[in-house]
Length: 241
Image (cartoon, rainbow, N blue to C red; front, side, top):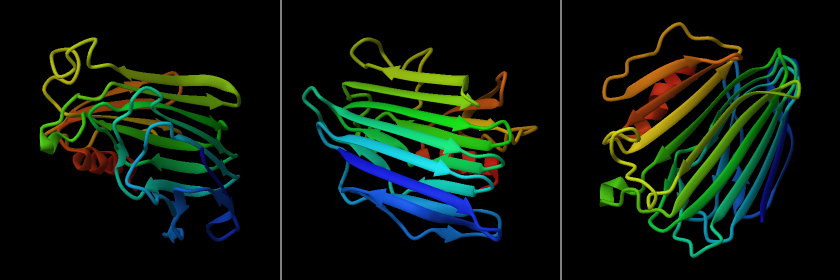
């Protein structure tokens, strides 16, 4: 099992990482400090996730922190026999803390099994933006929807009360995913959830199919496309980060 823990605080001038702990293959790069936020990049010292791997990530984003969390490269899930790969992420935001959580897109290789759960525990005064981007596989190599199963749960709690839940469960053997009602011929799907920073309109969606839904708390945008990079740029335009 690979573990990662990061704690950040606002020191009156900028957001700093005050504590961190990680085990192989996870690593954390030196933070990048910008005018109004700090960016932390989580890296992987391996080619990808392997059969039986379990990842446990915990983040404490303390009061007043302004943070962007990114990844180094696409998350590659290699072929599995039965156990698959599991990833659990828990993120806690303090009062008046701001977080844009944008891990790199997931690429499930042929025969792979992936399960993930990401939970956000925030305050009413927090600002949260997070995205989740999925690729059908190594599309450029003609490998589309050849994984065994993919399941990703994303949940948001405000002061302990659940306010948003999204569950993506894809099993190619059960249904034709590329057709009508699913990917509609596209190869990538992305989700971004925003709380505390409403947007009035979507940026240019050329080459993408996007729709926005206002939830009881915050809003959600889902988008279909043929390039993970295009979806990342689209989400970055929405957040301005």
